Every structure is written in structure tokens, then in C-alpha cells.
Image 1 (cartoon, helix red, strand yellow):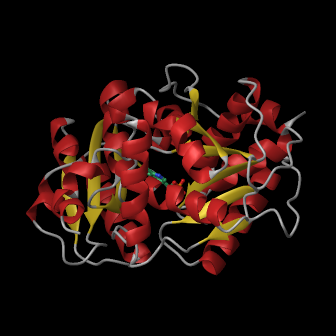
Image 2 (cartoon, rainbow, N blue to C red):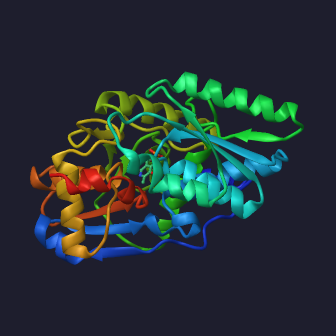
Length: 335
Ligand SMILES: *Cc1c(COP(=O)(O)O)cnc(C)c1O
């Protein structure tokens, strides 16, 4: 039994419409002196796409297997996960409750009304507000209480379980994405991917290793320092070992970089601004202010300082997040 066989045992709701494209970014490559290929996971088709569509296939599979009729999720105000969950719920005929946490200080009206929040409303999700920024336990608790209220009303709620003490179902989507890239026949010397909850990073890394591909996978920190994030990825990877029999990782397998993280989660720094402008002007493509701009900024920094060798082939996983561009209009215009 390979990890991919064992993965088949997990119920999956199909939300993808097929493999996402891989494209060579010719002009950006010339600028950076490395060959950049992009895995267009911003184009997973449902509900304006992004990496969460792959993760949700397994959470929704679990939710449907358990007979759920209402999906609950907690995230930042401009959460792509909440918006993607609301879209998946709509497609599968479930109600959605999204709890939005005030993680980013000092933002104005656009942040609270536009981008993903507007889409949550169009998707018919019920929105709850959680006023504390970095209180994961408190936010989880508040959402569980909401689920209990629904249960008392005779509903069948399913809380998307993102905490590290739960099975890493979301990572399974990226174990499969790694196989998808390999089967697309693109050769690459390293990959760069955003690392937030870590399910994308850990899943992709373990999926490559399960296919015997040993290239470095650089995780770009978007929420925590490189040290904290390394521990998180190691923890999720151990869970994937247990769940799927993925090969154990070595000490050097988990690479995390936080040079583009400042001034903090959901806040734009100069590196992210440069990445947004460079991608738009070289390639006519967009990266988002919260995640993919910082991931691309890490790629740029590693190419410039030689940690990614000149002329080598880099796979950039574009994890989506584009609706947030509109929520950050005032911040993107200020310079
Ligand atoms: C959530 C998100 C990430 C980070 O993915 P994790 O699996 O949480 O690490 C990266 N990019 C975008 C656009 C996201 O929405």
C-alpha cells in the first residue's frame, strides 16, 4: 500500500474540475535569473479558487459522510478559507456559518466590507464576528458553542477542524497536488509555497517525498516566525506519516523562511509590495497581499542571495487569495 492508496480510503467530495495548469513565467525568469514555473492553484475553479478548494475536498467528504447539513469555519476577516468553504457549502447544498476574527489591526471599511467578505455575503453564508485577534483557542471555543446551539435546534453542524490536534485532512489535498504536478511532467529543482496553517506546505512536501522526489520545498511564512513554523510543519508531517505511511522526513526537509513576514499577518511590507508589482508588470498575473505576495517575495529573496542557484528551475505554487486585493485597496494605493 502506498500513501496514495491509503489516501483513497478518505471520503472526498469532488470540488476540483481537473488539474490546474503549470506555466513558465518567461519575463519574471529573465528578471530573477532563475527559471520560474507557476502551478496555477489560483485557478481551482470553484468560488474564485485557491488552495483551500483542494483542502476542502477532504473536509467536505468527511462532513457529508457524517450527514452534516451546516458547515462552520473560523478565520481572519479576509479569510480565503471561509469564502471557499461557503462556496463549497453552496455547491453541495449545505448552510454555511463563517466566524471572522479581528486578526489585523488598524484596517478601514474596505477591509471589512469588500473582497472575501463581499463574496461570503453573496454566497449566503451567515457571518459571525470574533473580536479577539490572536486567540485560536477562544475562536475555536466560540465556534463550538455556535455548533451546539445549532444542534439544539435539530441541525447537523460540521466544524472544519483546523487545529493541530485534529487529523490533517486538508493536507491530503496537497499530497494529491504533489502527485498531480509530478504527473504533469514538469521537472523542477525546488518549490516555493506559502506556509500558514501549514497543511499546504506539509502535504505538498510529504506528497513529493512519497513519490521519491527529494527537491527542497521552501515554505514562506505568512503568520509565524520561521522557527515556530518549522515545528508546525514537522508536527503535521508526522501525522501524515501515521495516517498514510508517508516516509519520515529528515532534519533538513522542513525549510521555512520569514524574511517577508513583517510587519505581520495580513499586513503589507515592502517585499510584498515589490512582489505584487513585479508579477503584475512582468507577467500580467496577480498575487494577493496576505499570502502569495509574501511567498513570491521569499522566492525573489532566495534567488537574489543565491540560495536558489542561478539558472535552476523553481516551481512557485500560486495558492490564490486574489479577492483580498480589493479589500486592501487603500493599503495597496498607499506607498
Ligand atoms: C490559506 C492560504 C495559504 C496558506 O495555506 P495553509 O495551508 O494554511 O498553510 C496560502 N495562500 C493563500 C492564498 C491562502 O488562502
